[in-house]
Length: 204
Image (cartoon, rainbow, N blue to C red; front, side, top):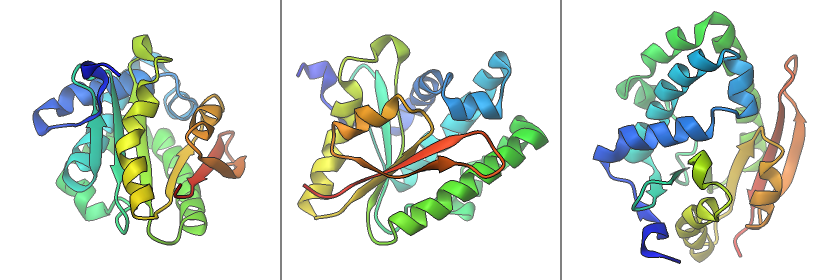
């Protein structure tokens, strides 16, 4: 592992660059293609949405990156794995619904409610939640994503806590399985065409 690929905590002044990395990483994600079919508009919406995720993670979670900011992994801690409305308002979530539009917002809420119910059912106790992880497209396939997860996977193991995540991208499932996550729920969001894989990792 080179010095530039060692996972390090993201710091506040890097939030804009980190948001851009996450936006690039999720541009072709099935969820965002569904929510915002137009590519140019999707880029704008992702810029705002990922900025919210990064700022929330900096304040209330743990975010890891590399020295060259090739990727970002955002975790929410045990007991705080559901982002609270008051905290989201504090960091400026109010403009997001306008950017998504009515159709995109209604689709997003349906997906969010579906995933939230699965999350509560599968991981009701204390656990770490991998809320978002992305690597620059030009740097994917180099092991950066797995490396960025290591600090929290090790911490979860040390405290005997499970880790949880969801993905709407089937290609991600084998990647997470390499790090001992297993699929515990696999289904379609009701009245929508999105497939969701919920995955759980027991402490090693």
